[in-house]
Image 1: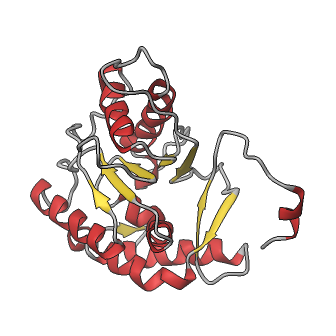
Image 2: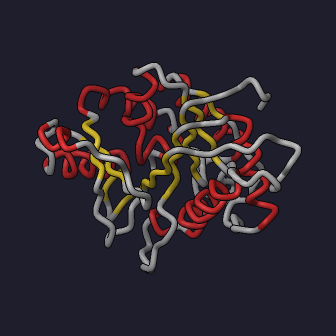
Length: 237
């Protein structure tokens, strides 16, 4: 990434397909609103049951084309993402080059021993790594060769079951494109969730969340930081 490659939004994921499967509709809406979005998988998912690193990267680039966003892979090893000083330097370099206002990452904590992908160690470790790197990015003496950068908002997706979404985005208008991007990961469509195809599970989860706000489909997020909220917004949908 060059210093001139700046983005409004950076979405970090442990693996290619994390962003699309969890928040592809929101990514599409941000792109359609004219926001420059960069999706950053930390690994090539080389330990996954289906596909190989070359296939996964090719699929990710096709998904990015469908959503109208950029993508850049980092060189972390699958199942070996760690929140270390060296890892934080890699993330800070991305943040300072891209200079986003908004960052998304998987939720940083999961206390459950679920067998599903949401509890994959790389997911919540990526969340903690990004959380801490956002703090480091605003410190002038951390990597002083690059200008410091302050991220305005950090949001989390891939929420564990004890963490209900407090920010819910209606993605009904872009649901077809969302699933076109998910289907770009053809190597991953063989995944089963409790005996159900992954694509079906992802559609049902969005439909269930949509019911909470009276929409057909939705995606959910949380943030750990306070958000300014004007009183008149209590009346806005």
